[in-house]
Length: 335
Ligand SMILES: Nc1ncnc2c1ncn2[C@@H]1O[C@H](COP(=O)(O)OP(=O)(O)O)[C@@H](O)[C@H]1O
Ligand SMILES: [Mg+2]
Image (cartoon, rainbow, N blue to C red; front, side, top):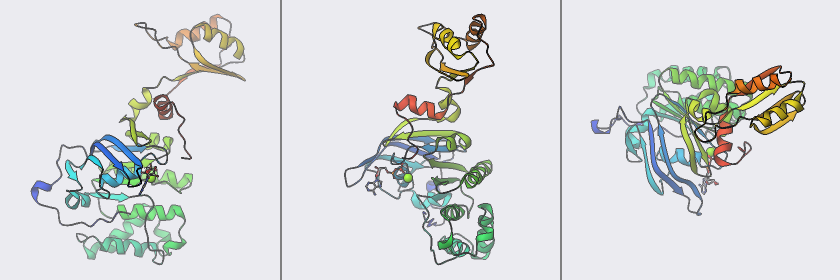
């Protein structure tokens, strides 16, 4: 967990630049002492108000990037900025606007969850001690830990520890929340709750920067995403555009899969897989200047050939399809 060693907001020239992207990196690079190139020439732009998914398999450089963005490690080269101000120079002025949970929260096991937050809040010199108790209770409530708040943190499950770390980031309203793999260690119900919380925080006006190695998590909650592989940025942009960039896959439900496969092949469909009652394939791209094939024409061709079509559709491309298309690799969820 990153401590918010907040100082009273800096001089006027250090105030956030209103029109600037919340996070901006240019050529950001980190080579660790051991020679490991963890982040390689990263250009990243996180728009104000976005829920930005920072997606990549384990070891792809997500945590290292976040540490550089927050001024916790020095880049080898390149620049990082928060709210239009350079980091780490502007850390004192900008970090009070940022709530962060990085790579598993650090907590005092011998203290209760509640006392951990009280202690954490007390490290923030701008936090009014008279309202501390109310702030802590509200944060515990938000992450669903109110009932377990008197338990010692060492008795918490991994998921509860993760929530406690998120609660610490939520003690004050923040313009930016940086959550590094916030659903690590959570069960599906816990993951749903975090997703709902992220949506709520975004609706209240915070920009949320969320790293994950889980594709569907990013697709479900994020407006924008950047995909990392081996320290390099593969692609970034609005999630809808990223997945739309991949051609969807044709799927036909039919009791005549062999005939359907033959007809589709004759009409230029490639990558055909015919199974029991179902045929899938890649739509032919339009050759040269030609229009891409209209799926409706394929459906008509099947029907003309006497194939009994029970369902016909084009399955939308997913971020995973985009990742596989861009890297030529599967997305290794286990890392
Ligand atoms: N402190 C460190 N010293 C040396 N290498 C590191 C250090 N931290 C991370 N690495 C390496 O840098 C690469 C990126 O790691 P990391 O940023 O933690 O990726 P992610 O968060 O995507 O899993 C990995 O190969 C990792 O082993
Ligand atoms: Mg990490």
